[in-house]
Image (tube, rainbow, N blue to C red; front, side, top):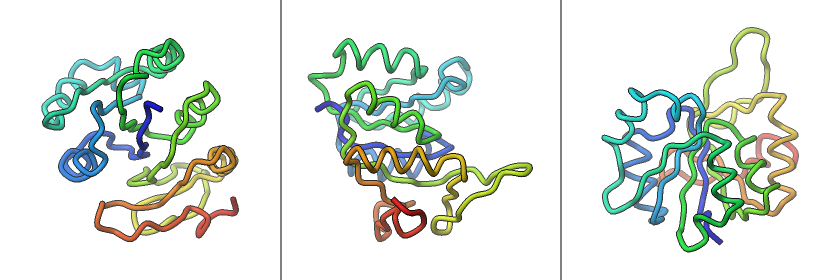
Length: 162
């Protein structure tokens, strides 16, 4: 198993993730899977400045991540994956990757006519994402809502039916 844990956080790698989550997960590699960031050298440079001490950092597109996992590139590593949305994790699971746990951290509020469910103080589950979360949970992945490592983990089933 290469993926040790995952986090959904629209800010991806920032102070709380770098200072608290990365040391708590203690993976060999922190991996940001995000097309927009992977294709933006300024964003990548800013995130590299937040690189967790003692851990490798990858900032890659979905396509690259999926190809690398499929090829077994990270089979000898432990990886902490951070993405903006749950679909990234469902895609990894469908490729055969085991994702033991996903933490839903800070998510963007919906815009326009989008609706959904408030999950704690800092997370929002869009209606169109509910089936994705359900499929992830059905695969055996534990999904919790928790902003800080010191916060009580609340199962996502408290907010949506799983």
